[in-house]
Amino acid sequence: MLESPRHLLQVQENPANYAAVAPLDYDLVRDGVLENSKDVVSYKASFEALNAKGIQLYFSKLDLSEGSILRLQNDEGKVQIICSKDNPDGGPYASTLFRGEKLTMVLEMVSKTAIDRVVVEEYGYAYRDPFPPKAKRDFGTSDTCQVNARCAEGDQWDDEIRSVVRISAKVGGSAFWCSGVLVNNTNQDCAGYIYSAEHCADGITPGDYEQWVFYFLYESPDCSNPGSEGVLDQKTLTGCSKIASGGGFGNTDSDFLLLKLTQEVPQFYNPHFAGWDRGDVVSDSGVGIHHPDGDIKKISSYTSIPTTSSLGGSVSDTHWRTLWSGTANGHGVTEIGSSGSPLFNSSGHLVGTLSGGASACSVGGGTGPNEPDFYGKMSYSWDQISTDSSRQLKPWLDPTASEYGEIDGIDWPCLEEPIVSIQEEDVRAFKMYPNPSNGIVTVENQLQGKQEIQVYDLLGRGILNTTLERQIQLNLIPGMYFVVAGNQTQKLMVR
Image (tube, rainbow, N blue to C red; front, side):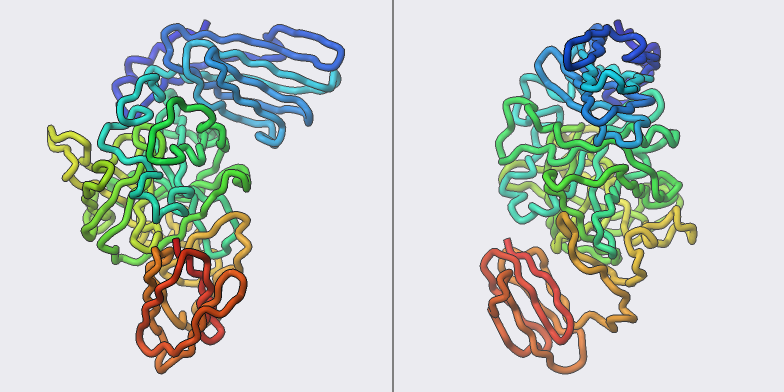
């Protein structure tokens, strides 16, 4: 029997938490029930946490031989299967969150000479139900004004939606939800960087990062709400390392946190590595994409220019003050759990991550749908906090020292060439926006004098050949295009 953690009431005082974490020294091979058959050796254990809404296991060691599997299953039939490739170094690991009071763990070894280690050091006792059986308008626990990411509001944002992840963050004796974004770098090498908010890691010890769980494509496939969680939580990766952070948790800086996933993101997760814009100017429209209260992915829309601000600390101009607009399917805002989620400009480029704010579905106590949220500026996080590389984004997201102010996102398997420095390529010959586009694209000449410009489709067929003086507009049907001027080529996506 897993007891309710003694510090549960203290953890519950923080509305961001969904679980209390407590010690559990359980070695499955040492303490489990041994079952032998002709082909398989298995060890079994059953856990029960009275009155818990869910259970999550944290392993100090999970070292599986090739061919061995660890199966976790609750009474509702939800299963997580873990094998050696999921934790190749055999060190710390974390399960996904299972609903209910009971959880069964079975280790199956096809080799009777295998030496597998499965040691549970802690468990998460969930006291809040992250997937209530009878949701109202929304699938999970977020408020009713939120807009599912795959509603019409998200039609032009497929790439950006695929870049956003839900994070189960373990920090000491508690676990809570945050959001983050998979981000591109100038090497364009699928490096596995996650950009989030530093306050999500406030109080963390280095070992905790190895047990953070990242959920990909945790979203409804359309605008409706699924009847149950089903297999939405099956695309996960466990473990990361901290690369850089601001150090001030938003009080004296932009509250940024840059992580690197322990493992490569699998192709079948269909990941997108978001592009970014480190400039200090923001467009008059865009979106925030996030997991409020750990719920399925939502989208919030802004239609006025975010203004420069701070989160109330002693340093100014660290954040974008952003107001949300009502749309056809609701009035998307942010909530606890949205922290660390990205703000995208109209070109689909990341410009900051969420620190906090007062937006809410309901008016009251200084909150409401027309109250602002604050996103830590990428421009400030880039190199304004410190000259120390561990407190900058610049050396990690621009490893080629290109000095470009913006780059586009990229899909797996990241086969594009690295982005070279401006000194090597001189200046960009032309600029295109928005990219991705819904069909109408503006191309601006960035050089002195006229240029010849060609547009090709994905099959290499010529679509347009014309002269670019100052600016032209292209009207294209959906597809992938390549725009060429001189010796420079840029990729264009029309949705």
